[in-house]
Length: 278
Image 1 (spheres, rainbow, N blue to C red):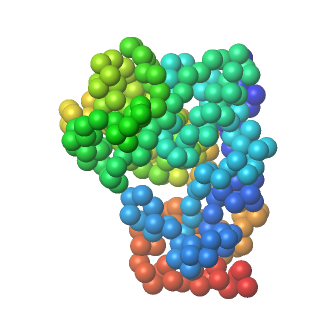
Image 2 (cartoon, rainbow, N blue to C red):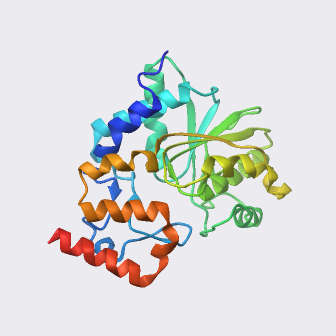
């Protein structure tokens, strides 16, 4: 079936509702008092004046439906995958919604999800070391795996998530998937990554360069990625709904996030947000 809209049309249609309904968050529009006063620390350890949080998207059924349909259109523009594995936690509802949306279009799509590792890790090699030291299943009772899916021999697997900053969590998810498949004695391919919003510069190049990582334990290959919204491209749209100072801060951060790692600059940003909020 032909996609309903192009990637660009979906991005233009969805970017402002994402802000107005509280999924693109800044110290200006968040209701979290702690984040109003402190901003956000990203997974890579850096400070940020904005955050994308799709975990409570169940509160916006119409928006969620649009997100799932946009992702379904993206999937139709790519080679069909046997199995989608969502990255916990935000990717899980997206996987379910996307599968149902694809089914309504006559496309049957299997999906599953990763479980959190017992310890936080930042690098794929750290994840692999942790996994290799584990005996038994996740909880030590019942039947729980680090990938909840029926992985089959020869599966073409794609990773699914809500957003990406630097691909770190996606590469960790891939490590978990390949480890789980090996544990179950099945051979699979996992070289595609799909997500909804891209906030990191150069992620496509990083995905292609993964083949040159030199870490044979990670089964490096050229990875393909695709997504709906390129945040930097749609950011100008948000100038219509943001405070002028808010927009300038987010724009400056996207252009040079390093300058915002200075505590004095962070305090200036938070003070400006406090003033605009009244």
